[in-house]
Image (cartoon, rainbow, N blue to C red):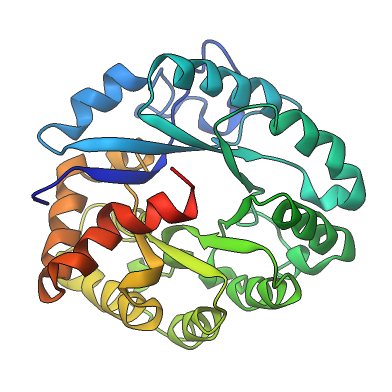
Length: 285
């Protein structure tokens, strides 16, 4: 385990009895409240000094309610140091009103508009989407990319990044490569292209979720982690748990231990950047 506290850059806090999350309805692991008390129980011996809340795909029209609820929690517990909220950037210039409302929240640091479930791989290259993302960057906010490489979405996302050079991007979950099949290509080629863009940081998170939940092994994960670390370098990767989605497949400490082993070859300063330094810089903690 890391010898010092960490910053968890990918935590979902929610209560489906307060706000509607239709996508998780009936899920025995997720469809119940997951707040700070549950998080504290899950982390066990891992010292989490700060966390970044990431939007949870609340039902349409309720994203401001979700962000405001998390801000109220952050007002009471400073460990919630940043909020990444949903905003419909596909509205283009019209997203400004949404961003105005969200930026009234002191902890807002980023915007995420899910791409992963869009049937058109090039959805994110629509002119209004690109314009919306540019406006996110103009406000000093990061834009988080949550997509599925196996659906051909990583290449178009790289083009989005190129078209928005003044926006800082965060790639969630290594782009969700198809770990379950063991396929490394074309993910390797595409992730290397994305890593050539200097305005992108990659989260080391969510990888076990893409594996076979009953059969995954550390050896199966290692090629993806090694390659992402080689492409981005320790200056542009960050730790994230993806809790509680992660609870479907593994304990919180399991992922921390896997990353700790991955990082053993780095010097102490580089390891510190991955565990918390990069997160502090990206999210202005």
